[in-house]
Image (cartoon, rainbow, N blue to C red; front, side, top):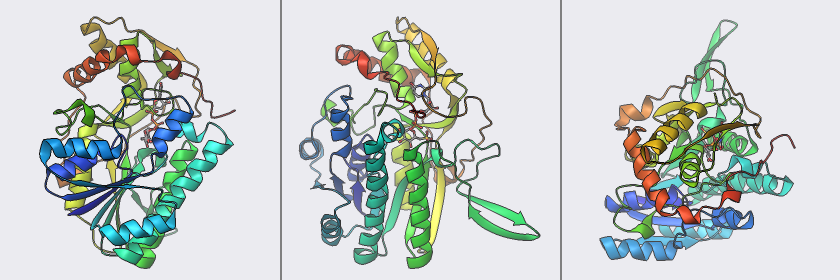
Length: 383
Ligand code: USQ
């Protein structure tokens, strides 16, 4: 496969690039360093510095003798986007290239506008470039479980059969996102569905839950190949944050009642899922949707797990409920289906004490770099 990974500098983009490259595929990564810039601008730097894309690619080559091509630029720039697609002519496009943080999208009007324009504009240009330069290619787009919100009914994989006044139809499962960031993902899905119907694109939209972890099989050979690991309030996902908080001796920040339940997955499983989707492309004119997670946990359950493992490591871990800065249900029904990727062959890496301990040992090595003022600033949804 010729795989173009959009957002190839990110927490998931770079590990995905190595995963495909290791398996013999021709890979190019594209990024404009938006996430790095937003993190720097908000003083929310990651736990350890990571090399830039050119450096990462040459480190990868040192170890594997495999090439990965690099494109630095903005998908909102049509000339750049069109040129890359015309030159590389991918047969698989993996699209992670979005502002990925819910709190960042709720920070102020500027960050809201950036999130809206960047995410919708990038997805639009990817669609237009595919139509022009590689209409047969398969687009694998990262959506989010947060598109569905937390409805009081079972969540299907993307679609819902509805019977109304004696007639039946199949529709996108109702979406009611909980932040502007998540809402841009809903808009992306609508955009994709429109062009799948109209231009016959080939699209897999993956509704992914929060991801955790540091290690993948490809990055163990060299520290410099590790993914960017955020633990701050804006860019860190909850379990990665809790691991760092435990190491720092900072009470685990459970928002409100802590009954907020989500579908989580190990970073290794993100790579498996993307690869399985790529190896099993959909037909032209199909929008396939999978719910991409392996286990559901409440925030309280995650805090308890981190506390247990932290104590086994000799850490003094306190759990503290604080006023919830977000607007979300803190106790709710949650039963999302997730059989599609398992049927394709996903072999889950579950959240065991060993998995937590391995990641926390790594965090412990960077304990001195943890900056407590990044852990909680209280970005409010209802300002
Ligand atoms: N939470 C806490 N304490 C914290 C941080 C978070 O209780 O210190 C709670 C949040 O209120 C929320 C849950 O933990 O109920 C998950 O929060 P999160 O920050 O890990 O995840 P979220 O903001 O939803 O976004 C993350 C990624 C995003 C992805 C999404 C998947 O940043 O890119 O799309 O997870 S999902 O949550 O399924 O929509």
